[in-house]
Image (cartoon, rainbow, N blue to C red; front, side, top):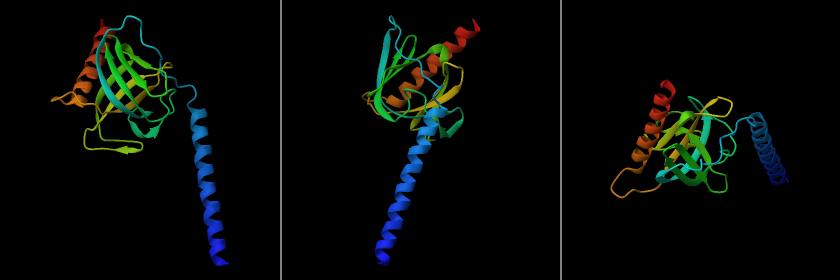
Length: 173
């Protein structure tokens, strides 16, 4: 009889933990419902480069362990990062394309840790940008594609940093 009681206790605890996780996630979705990423690529944007990528997470700026549920960047997904002459487009499987115009981009650099992911030093790209309401957030990408003999992650980072620099020069002009 004691094994049955122990099994029942474990089952009740497991159900409680799952329920608590679901309720906490729903609360996060409600809390962040006002944070929205811009959708749709401008009609005349010229595609410069494409990179296969894994979108990892979006967090509060400089708080890599505090996830934000910015729609449609809520869940981790595979997709493609497209660099255009006007900004960066993130096309994730099962989601509409997010377009971060150069004017929204703040900075791009390397990262090692974010919520749910730890990789080799510098294995992630952290892209700081502004949402529609002006909130600064960090999105983390892991470039998975290969550009032959070149470092695809390094090339993507250089392209993103150039877009951020274009934003700064355009803002000061």
